[in-house]
Image (cartoon, rainbow, N blue to C red; front, side, top):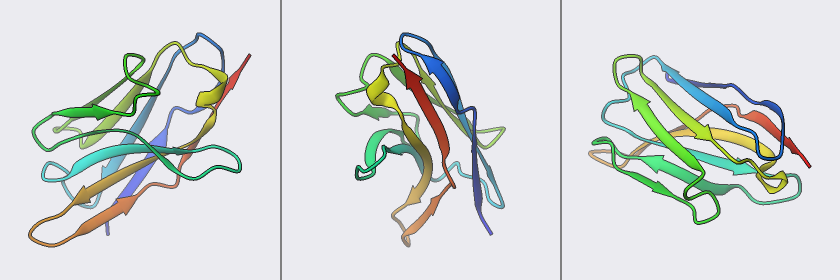
Length: 118
């Protein structure tokens, strides 16, 4: 049974920084792409960024240049470093592990709240 557990959320002032972590257990995630999504109140869940099995990263335009995703294969974790936070970054942040071959495998964490005050 794979579990993803996010941590590191909290309340921060605009312009501040936070680092979220996602710890995977039950299986090594080295063959999975790991991603971060977020869902603001009353909004749909949206893509924040992801990191491939080989370490390539992609980001949503709204966070490009401010957020950085990294992964630690040995610790089976993925992190999201968020700098220059804005009130519009307020959301529940979710970690996702996904593999598309040879079969589709998809896991989500329970989410961690990030609140950015103005």
